Length: 392
Image (tube, rainbow, N blue to C red; front, side):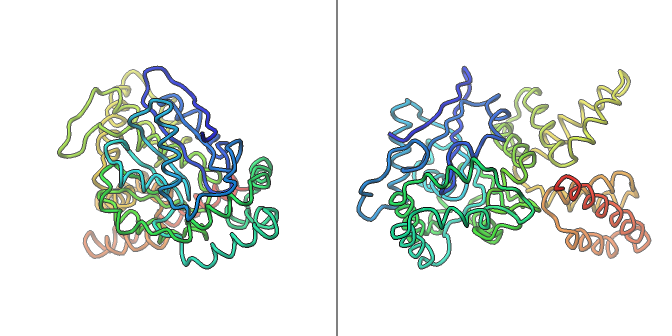
């Protein structure tokens, strides 16, 4: 059986967290406390990783289905029938396969820094040959270049885990990735799906995430700036907020679906509001709440951020573009500055923000756009300075 760890939360649904190649369940530690408050969390090791038994020898011609079958066997042993699923890279590909082939079991899906096909097969086969002939050391030493942006300090325990991976099992996983192509199966996925990409990811570039989001019906796409392949480590707050918003929001309803009790809407609204506007702004707004404004704050949290922003029909990039346009048209400069920063958090680039404002010059007015460009330029500079300060 695959090595696993279960973080039980009584009466809660199950969320499976799947690792990337070369990592262990420790990969998910930044997200674990927040997610464990709402779910039974199941984390597990790939074959030959962490404390899972090595493939020695590996199955003949292993495929993604081979890995998925191991996980399904673990779920059967634990008597888990239905579950939500979040996976990074290879772990995300396993979730994609499960959602396509077992739609009755996967209730919701989050795919992080992964792909339906991981590029040409030759580099993966060459990497498999390298670890078989030279051991895992050379590949493990070079992992930070694939996993992180240059400014990020790779956690030592993560690199140590990579050095302990069984070479034969790692090579077999490389061969699985070499032969992988899930593109024809994306249309079969019915689970509500969130796709997250690191804008600086060289292993699975954002174009791979867009292909997933385009191929999966009604999937949402979030691109994170200053994040590479293990985006949940480089941008832990943004990924945690996005996962909470996605998974807790499932079942709250869309334009054609039912609404539930206000309390889940409040939780979704709080998570979404913090993800878009930032913790500092929400904390300030909460601290300024008085008995006179309390109902209004509750209203915008539940309705604006929970029901509208938390809906599944439009992705957050689109919502940000619409919001910027409306604020320019209304002349709301303070709110515009706030939402320019929110648009950057939601994955719009400064150039894309500029394109939205150019559109406003045509359909709102040139004077309105002129003022908006001045506000946006300051907001973009402040956001960049704040981000650089956090990075340092």
